[in-house]
Amino acid sequence: MLFIGRVSILELTGVFMLGVGVLLNTAGLATPGLVELATYGGYMSLGLWKYCWREMCAKYKYETVHFHDIQQILIRGQVFAILAMVSSCLGLALTFTSVALRQMGKPKIGFLHVISFVAYKFSLAFILRTLIVCGVMLQPSILEIGYSFILSTIGGIMILVGNIVFYLAIKKVDDTPQHTRLIDQS
Image (cartoon, rainbow, N blue to C red; front, side, top):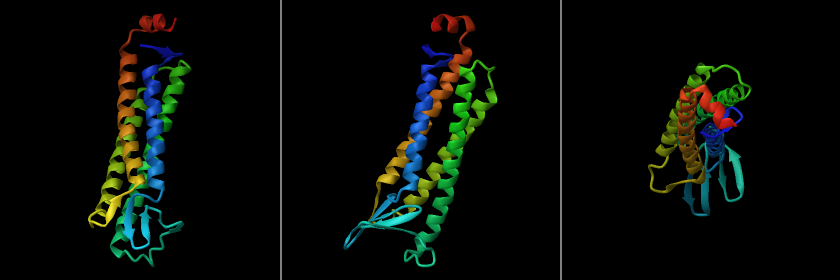
């Protein structure tokens, strides 16, 4: 296995995928394009936080939302989106900490890997819940999937794959004898 310092290339690949996945998921949940509604004047993009029609965007005012059924869906989607972003950022911070400690030659801290693994699993669960809640808005045939929905889905998939790659890399490095790692580094 190839190493850069004390960190394997596989670990860095996992961290890169996790970082890109968190970025895509956050961008997808923060932008107003989860679903699109065809109107007479063009498309209206609906996001969790605001909506856009033509070139104008506005935040939702729940007292004046004409889509009264969508109001509860949006609130639930916002809660799950916030939980997804917080848990994925926590997992990413713990992953960076783990890699930094390994690079500095500190002793193995196994609970960091477990906590970050669990944080990413919670993040994936919340991402799925957000997408399912927003998918409920797609029931009428006039609504279509928007670019934010796709960004968030791709981000969730990258978080899943990056988490698996990172976890397998950690397990493989931990199972590699110390003298083999020293030979590979020279």
